[in-house]
Image (cartoon, rainbow, N blue to C red):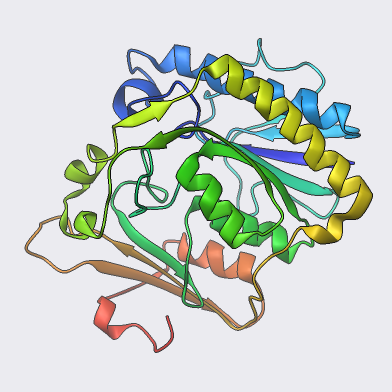
Length: 288
């Protein structure tokens, strides 16, 4: 059983502020690299105990976001820039996908440090389905026939994961205390980056213990019956849009739009290419 673990940092228990914790040079960044690495190690221990034979860990937050000296020596670490970007090293040789340290999508109620790719994104949709970073990468796995079996992050992320990929095993180490209720739609990027800072957090040690137990259960479930892990019925053609906050508040949002007749992964790469179409939201094709 070969597993890919995609990592992020904002969803890690103990991380409390984006600028201080999640940006290289931030005063707590080194501490948070360690916290992320230890959560990954807990998941790795659980997956191996549950029957995994090979694990690759991807540095989804940044190339230096994991401490390689502390990372479980049994795993491979995947880092650097891919061209094309997606599916970020994932291929059909993997049997399952997992997440550690993931956060909820932009605009989510009671999420901690929620955003989608960056704080300037208002919404990201594929064929009318609003998704975040979790959904964006999970649908790459879907196209490759790989189920998502595990996700650890804040509580809003676990709810998002359970709704989008039913059957996934989840662990929530903290939860946000701020209700969005649509207020963030009119905020500047800087205002939104400061909005979701309040949280209630469990003990990192207790959370790591739960991550290990739950990762083991997820791997055992995959070996017993992987049909319990599901995706939405997403059919081609694929139409994808990323709506960004205006640089000046008085201006209208900008919509980046891409489409592909057959491949979600190709569509996603087009959305992140220099040739991406830039439209006003009101000019988007019907159904997006």
